[in-house]
Every structure is written in structure tokens, then in C-alpha cells.
Amino acid sequence: MVSTRAILILSSTTLIIVAVYINIHVIQRHDRKRYSGVGFHYQDGNSLLRILQQSVSSSSGRLSITSYSDPRTASIQVEEFDESDQSRVKDLEEKVPLLNAFLEELEGKIQSFSNKVGSSIKEETKQKEDRAALHKEEDRKVSKETQDEDAKSLTGYNILLLYADDWSHHTLSSFHKNATTKPILQTPMLDALAEDGIRFTHNCVTTSVCWVSRATLFTGQYMSRHNTTEPCCWSGMEKPRGGMKDAPSNWKELSVYELLAKHGYYVGHAGKWGVYMPWPKNVAFSREEDGWHYRQMGDKVWHITEKNEADALRFLVTRPRHRPFFLNVAFYATHAVDHDSRQYLPQNKSMSMYVGDVVPIPATGTDEAWKKMPYFFDEKNEGRQRWRKRFQNNMLHQSMMKNYYRMASEVDSACGAILEELRRQDALDNTFIIFTTDNGNFHSEHGLADKWYPHEESIRVPLIIRDPRMKEETRGTTNDAFTLNVDLAPTILGAAGIPSPEMFMGRDISQLYLTRSAYHTWRKEFFYEHPPSKPDPHTIPASEALVRKDYKYMYWPNYEYEQLFDLVKDPGELDDIFNSTDPDVVSVRNDMKKRFSELKKLVKSNERVTL
Ligand SMILES: *[C@@H]1O[C@H](CO)[C@@H](O)[C@H](O)[C@H]1NC(C)=O
Ligand SMILES: *[C@@H]1O[C@H](CO)[C@@H](O)[C@H](O)[C@H]1NC(C)=O
Ligand SMILES: *[C@@H]1O[C@H](CO)[C@@H](O)[C@H](O)[C@H]1NC(C)=O
Ligand SMILES: *[C@@H]1O[C@H](CO)[C@@H](O)[C@H](O)[C@H]1NC(C)=O
Image (cartoon, rainbow, N blue to C red; front, side):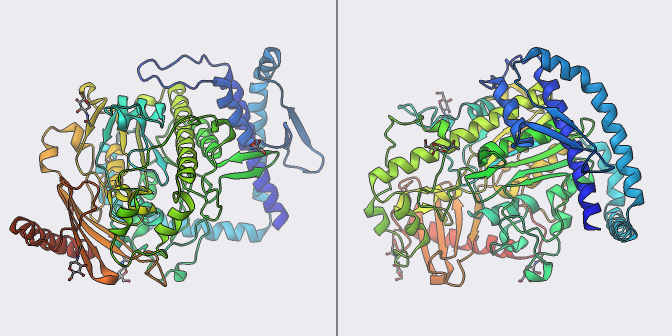
């Protein structure tokens, strides 16, 4: 039984490989004219193709197609060859119709073969189908009334989410556009995307850690609602539902992926999931990569960003063109490899970047700032431990930051290649594009590294949106409204024309650039929450906050410790004025504590709220 199943899988995998192979060579003949409006261009057109090709077959340079009937003997072989060899390219192109016919035949044969396989597989399939039918029926029940209405509002836009990891808000050269000195970091592709779209300068996350923030992206809810407070199953394992007792019962019905698939989207995910999915992932395309920077696959040593890019391109090349797609390219960069003392491992080709530069030490990257942290921040604090690995002296600081920047520039150029492929497919102007990340990072500020806490470095992250609906005058602008990661789900569904479930807690960000008045009624403050590390909250104490532009109130529940910062006078969040007797400060403090309690109560309730 196992072997027949293996053959089935092998055959369908082969089909896909052949299809991609054909695609690559058809693409190669395409005229690679530049998209002049935006200026996305991939420096070396051929290497894009090569990367894609390698990700399909990294081994022998020969593709072997094993036919259905007898895997040991019946096979045809396609040899790989130099792409500059025009006669061979032409030769292959002539074979495309033949190969297509072969594919069709193969498909038919796989079909009839699968009809013949043993009864247990049939039975299993039948059970699966029954279950699927049951789910379908359930889905139908849930959405029957709304579905017909929904269909009318669907925009048909593709949705591309470029989702980086551990990426600070200032890790974009466009962020430093107005600075007097030229920024060291270069992100030309993302800058071009921002030039053609809108950049949100005060975008924040409601919890600064990957799995919680991702769960928020998937479900449109705060951590207190989606309940994913513990890390679990990093590398794609499915965990039985019973294994996670607080796994929320309503994840499936709220999942953006599910909702898009249900409305006809071809849904894909390339990269890090980073969160436990309490149900089988309903994605047509999924390549999970997480937790490594370099890995040998076949003959090639892959860098994870290269792999993320290749997988994204493979999705775009092989997707059915008659359906809109949703793709999350969930890069692992610039996440450090925690257990490796080198932390950040960029690609060799990037090592010549930033060599002669001197990365400035942040204003709050001082011992004095570290000493101003609350008394429970000591050398055991996880942020402090990681600071020792990365920033405890200038030499280390320089090499870590340069490697971090190199990894960021690599993501930037991967984004360029992905956008270039969209342009090549003539799909750029029919695609809603977001660039953002799961959380920010301390780069020595407050004597810390990494994330978790409610300080600006940790919670403020980049957000760029390029929207086909945008007016010309909006493009290239910035917006300083408090947009949040909890807004991503309603924004994505909004772009598709799918109404958000009532339990979503955020807002559709497009209001901010599609309607003039939205900015004035937009939120001016938000609640922040982060769970404690377990079992010992001492290494990562839980934190909560009320964040406004002028003041920030922080609460550390494990120590019942409160802080207040005046962000106008003290943007570095160094001087805690919570105990001030100044009547103005006392009044602000009382007001913020009151509002903090109200928002916290709402977030932790089951009420339907838009925050
Ligand atoms: C940058 O400078 C431009 C032109 O002077 C100005 O319009 C814009 O508001 C500035 N942006 C920021 C974020 O300061
Ligand atoms: C989240 O967990 C809490 C307590 O553990 C529970 O009361 C609540 O029902 C859970 N929420 C969901 C949506 O499952
Ligand atoms: C990168 O360069 C180092 C040092 O030259 C070499 O040992 C390593 O194999 C290279 N890695 C890759 C993936 O090429
Ligand atoms: C404010 O007062 C509390 C209670 O006395 C104390 O624990 C805390 O350390 C004080 N904060 C500062 C910044 O002095």
C-alpha cells in the first residue's frame, strides 16, 4: 500500500516539476522589459530563472521523469543545459507541445491508475472526502446567506504579503529619507515599493513576538482572544488539538487563509509559519522554512532567503492564472539563529556590503539606559542575555549590525525579484501588496537585544502598502496613524472585497488612504500585551501598556510595577515619571490608567469591538 501511495505522490510531484521546467524555459524567451513606472528591476534577469530552477531541482542537473507504469524502467529524461545555448532553448521550446501532450496523458493515466489502487486507499480517500464534504456543508451553513452578497463585492485582486521577521521600523532606507546623513542600510526595492504606495510610519504590533503576532495576523484578534500565548511547534508540526488546551475554538472560522480560500483564492505560504495551527493547513501551496540560515538541499547549499524567494517564484509561476491568489512570503530573515553564536548569517555575496561603514550606537544603547530599566531587569533577562551575544562591545555591535543589514538587503532584493515576476506576468497593477513584519527588535537600546517589551524599538515596525485602488496623489506619501498588526486581517479581506468576521478587532487600513476623513476618526491610542516566559517569568516578564503618541503607560503584571513616559520630552523612554507629583503629570497618569483598564477589559472580553 505504502509503495503505491509513494508512486502516486512521486508521479504528481514529477508533473509539477515538468510543468515548472517548461515554464522556466518559456519565461526565458520572454522580453524582459523594465517596469518603468516603479523601477523594480532585477539586475541579472537570468539569475532569477536560475534560482527558480535550482529550487526545483538542486541535484543532478538532469530531470528524470518517471512514468506511471513501472517506476524502475519506463522513464524519459530531460537534460539540463546552458541557458545561453539558444539552439537548445529553441529545441526545448519546440518540444513544449509534445511535453504538454505527454503531461495530459500522464495525468489521465495517473487518474486511471489511482482508480485501480487498493481498497484501503479508496476507503481512506472516501473517508477524507466525506470529512471534506461535511466541512463544506458546515461552511455552507455558516456562509450561505452572505455568500451570494459576498460574490458581488469581490474585487479579484491578488494579494501579496511580504512578511519579514524581527525587522525594526527603521530598517528601511526610505525611513531615513529626511536624515542629514546618508543611511548605511540600503533597501532600494522596498523604497521603490513605498514610492509607489504608502508607508505607515507609526505602525505597531499589539504583541511583540513572532507566534503571537502571526496568530494575530491570521485571526484578526489580540493575543488575549486568540489565546496562543505559548510557543508551539515551530517547524510545521501539527499538534493534536488536545495537546494545546487553550487552542481557540474559532481559529478556523476566523483564519484569513481559510476565508480567502473559501472565496475562490488560490492560497499559498512560502516560509515561516511560526505558529501552531489547530487544524490542517488549508493552503494550496505551502513550503515551510524556519529556524535556519544555511542548509544543504541536494547539491546546493541554500540560504533561507534564497529559498523563500525561489518558493515564492515557484508559487507565482505555477499558480492558476484564472483565479486570484493570496501569497504570504514569510521570510525568516532577519531573525537570528538563536543557538548559533554568530547569530546572523548573511549570504556570501552580501559580505562586501557595508564593509567600510561605521554603524552608529543608538542614543539609548548605554549602560546608563540599562540601569534605568526596572529593578527586575537583571543579567538573567533574556533581552540582556542576547545583548551580551550581540552588542556588549563595539566590535561585536559593528559585525552583528552589518550582518543584520546584509540580511535585510537580501530580503529587499528577494522582494524585488518577486515583484519583478509579478510585473513580468502583467499582474503588478492587479495585486494588493503589503510589506511588514511580525515584531521589531532592540539593537542595544536600553542595553537589550530582541523584542517582547513595550518600548518603541520592539513594538514599532515597518508597513508599506501598494494598492491598485490608490489615487495617484497618495503614492509615495507617508501616514503617521497608529496602524496595528490586528488591522492586517481586515485590510487583506477588505482588499479582496470579503467582509470581515464580526470577531475581528482591527480596522481596514485602506480607509486611511481611500477616504480623506478616516485619519481624524482613527485610533489615537492602543493597548499592548505580552505573555511572561514560562515557567520563570523573570527572564521575560509579562508586560502591558497603553500607547499614545505623547505618553506611554507600562504595566509589568508579574511585579505589579507601573511606569509612565513623556514621549515628547523623552522619546528614548528613559525617565520614568510615574511617581511625579506635577499636577499635569498626575492628571495624565490617572487618565491613562483609566483608559488602560477600559481597553484591557475590552480586549480580554468576548465583546465584538473595533479598536
Ligand atoms: C520629509 O521631507 C519632506 C520634504 O521636505 C516633507 O514633506 C516630509 O513631511 C518629511 N517627512 C518626514 C517623515 O519628516
Ligand atoms: C481562551 O482561553 C480562555 C481561558 O483559557 C477561555 O476561557 C476562552 O474560551 C478561550 N477562547 C477561545 C476563543 O477559545
Ligand atoms: C561562503 O564562504 C565561505 C568562506 O569562503 C565558504 O567556506 C562557504 O562554503 C561559502 N558558502 C557558500 C554557501 O557558498
Ligand atoms: C515609584 O514608586 C514605586 C512605589 O513606591 C516604586 O516601587 C518605584 O520604584 C518608583 N518608580 C520610580 C521610577 O522611582
